Image (cartoon, rainbow, N blue to C red):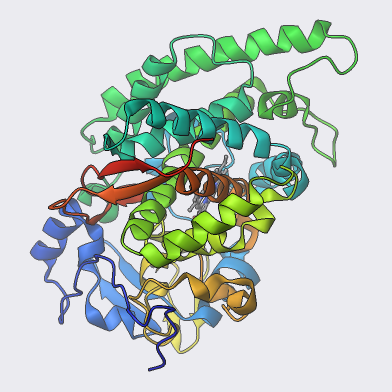
Length: 466
Ligand code: HEM
């Protein structure tokens, strides 16, 4: 096959070798608990549609772009988010956009759409630059040769960006305590239990739920205080004297059809939703991008040159000018999609290509499999950002590349996330060479998101002062 890599060298980043045959039931349960990514056997990377019989349900794995388009777009009313996802997302997120269904979802989506429109997101570029530069300065202060764990650094950074863009005047309490509680939240819900996967009824207790409730109670109280303080401020602020952030936009958002604002429960749930949906996903895409650049000196040099040139220009339109950096982020999202699998449950029987779909089947669309599918991608396991450079980007078929999903329930924060990851990667790569410590084992692990299994220690070599 044609070698399109600029150096002639191809880099295959770490990924599980798919087993040649399907796993038996016991092995499947064990592997799901350890790392669901390791369950995908070789046939799924070459078959458009496959079926698996599970004890309580029948799973249909759909990796044919036309069939995916039918599930997520053309016949999306028939394919609701399934109870597995709803169970995982229960608790504090229950009234937020990610979890609500049917008419409540329609009202929230149209009310929230303007908050994440490209123009609004463009206004947050300054906050993203500020957060990235603060981190670069902190790293610079550690001295040449210092070692940082890129995974946890990116997790703190993306939370800082959300804090700056949602509550530009601060979270009011102890930021570190807030961050630790959020990490605890992910640790509890991150493990997709076999009980959930096999459709065991809700009344069977799940370990960890009591802890989750306590963690969420802390968040809800902290966030209610912030909302109340802002409400009072908006009520007495004259004219436009208000913080220009997502919280103000949320409190002022009106459903365009009825002109109704959101309830307090919906505002609070959506803040929690933005924090949880936008935090670890974006952090992972940045950690993977930095890892991939650490293995690819040629692309790292290209990103640095571009950043050196473009960061001197205006903040407006910056992310659109960083085309090489963005291509690296998009390629990282292809190889390590933070949401590695989506699932849906049909309400009525349907047909997907040759496959009859029963109403009780579980539909699984795994971006991880789709993005490495042998029928859809040239050298699927090779890191090659040139697939996403402007000259090639339009040739990537819409339903072969789904890091943000597709159709009406596509990620509302995709422009926000891409802009953030692009700006942060450019700022940090311009300032530093980040080299993985020798002997570090980097491995993808699927919990709720697809993240590096271990810490990612990298040595900092500052290249330029700001
Ligand atoms: C690289 C970062 C991100 C990735 C890979 C990602 C991925 C996704 C995916 C795949 C979905 C669709 C799930 C499905 O169809 O079942 C989704 C939905 C969603 N995302 Fe993101 N996301 C990211 C960042 C963000 C950010 C920054 C925010 C907000 C600040 C956000 C908020 C949401 C919300 C609210 C939904 C639900 C939309 C709806 O159901 O109408 N995401 N995301």
